[in-house]
Length: 234
Image (cartoon, rainbow, N blue to C red; front, side, top):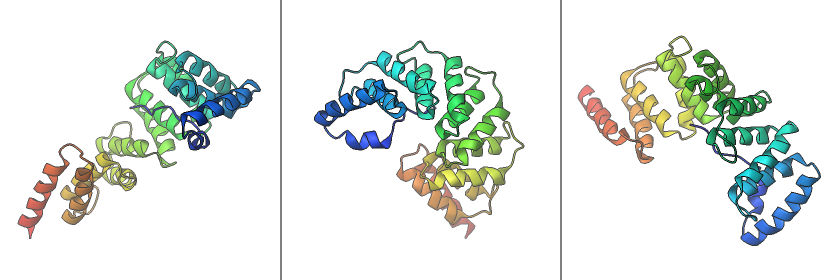
C-alpha cells in the first residue's frame, strides 16, 4: 500500500474556496517560475488535484520534477508516487524507486515506508526482506504508523528478521496507539493468547473493541470470542 501524494499544510490552509484556489494558483505559479522549490511542489499538487486550474497530471509531473531536481524531498516523494501510479507518466517502478530513495535518504518517512514496500514486494528492485525491514524501521522510528505495523508483522512472522513476538508486540502497540485498527486487532489477539506479552483478556478486549469500533473485519466476532474465553477462565 503506497501513500497518496503529500503537499504542504500551508497550501491546504489556503485552499478554502475556488476563488482562493484561483488567486493562490497565480501567486504559486509566479513563485514556481522563479525557482522556488516549495512553490514548484505546490503547483504540481494544484495541477494534480485541479485546484485553481484544470486538472493536468502531465503538468503536475513537470513541476514535481523541477522541485525534485533541486533536491526537495517532498517533490521527490510525489514524483515517485506518480511513477508508481502511472499518473502523468508511464508506470515505472524502477523510476519510482529512484525518487523514493532520494527522498528516503533525506529522512522522508513516507518515502522510507514506500521503499520498504518495494523491497518487500520486489517492485522495481530485487525482493529483499532485510532491506524492507531496514527502511520500515527508519520510517517507524519517526512514527510512521504503517511502517510500525509492517515492522511488527515482520517480527511476528520472522520475515527478514529473527522471529520475536515481544518485539512484534512493541511495534504493534505503537501503531495501535495511533489508532491503526489492524494493529489493534493483532495486538488484541496477542494479549488473548499471551504471545509476546503477558496474557490479559482485559487488554485483549480493550484492543479488540477499538478495532471493532473502526469496523475492522472480524474484530466484532473475535471480541465476542474473547469475552467468552474470559468468562470461562473465571
